[in-house]
Image (cartoon, rainbow, N blue to C red; front, side, top):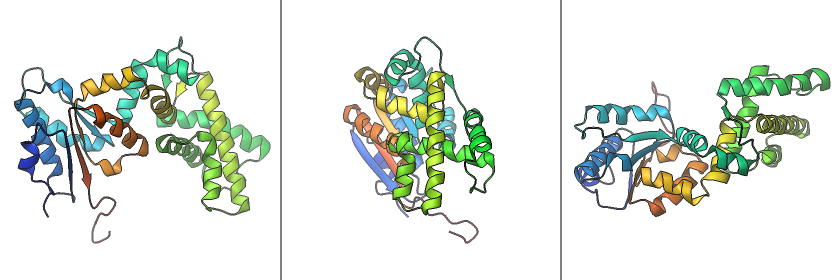
Length: 278
């Protein structure tokens, strides 16, 4: 199995503006990307202008390990971020602007929820509806899974770029259930809306609200784009196929202004073999 571009070609292409690299797992795509980073440094690019963007944190280890052992100039530090960590940093840094635009409280510090605390807040909304109004009477999963599913619905809506108020209608239109199931979707929709309202009133930002604030109210601002494009004038995106629509839209705008970009994706993404099972 070979890369579509050789590792040496990628490493030596520091002046190329945009490169696309694809191949199957284990063909050396990440090794080639690390070689490109070192080549950029050798060609005089400041470390502070190189940014590696990944869909999730587990993919950062090869970069962190290689860059720790590389002979980088004193003080040089390459940023390796996930889309989620970039979103969080942006909302924190531009909080006053974000809060005003998103209908939050700009004079009160934001409280960033973890998955666990988001599910706890969701429980305070769902439990009274179950106990007093008989919501989700046909649902057999545990309450913890129910909280998690509604939170997950909100996250998928934000990452896909549609309003959280459209969740139930989209699921019904997908033909996922009959009439009785549609009532469950509507109840879950109501819980999602009540959760979002409670979060906004109290400046509680779960991941879905962070993404919504970022995509709708911050990344659209020239000063926010300029801030990140300066830090990532040379952008490297690995495992592009695992990214979300929100991440892909951001990258598209970023590439238009970046000095160079390397986009990497796995041609066999989603197909893995483990103990003879695929």
